[in-house]
Length: 74
Image (tube, rainbow, N blue to C red; front, side):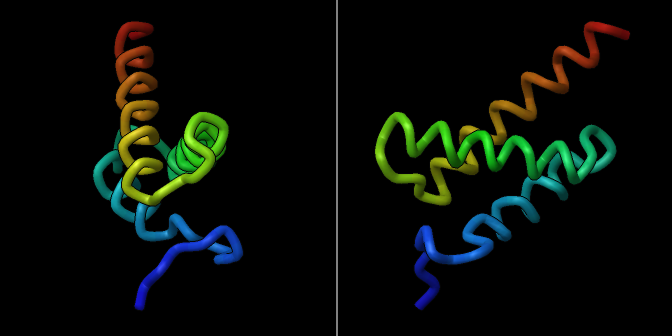
């Protein structure tokens, strides 16, 4: 059983790995980690629970926006 709980020290390790691969060459792993952490806390604040699939979707949106901003800056 692969259940993610708040007590799990790295509940979003898979999410981070997927996003690091997806955004390799665009964002550093530290940026991916920060976006996953921000998504986690945002989901908790809004819904009261941060399911990994929700955290992944939110973090992916953050990373897309950051990439867009970086491309507009030149």
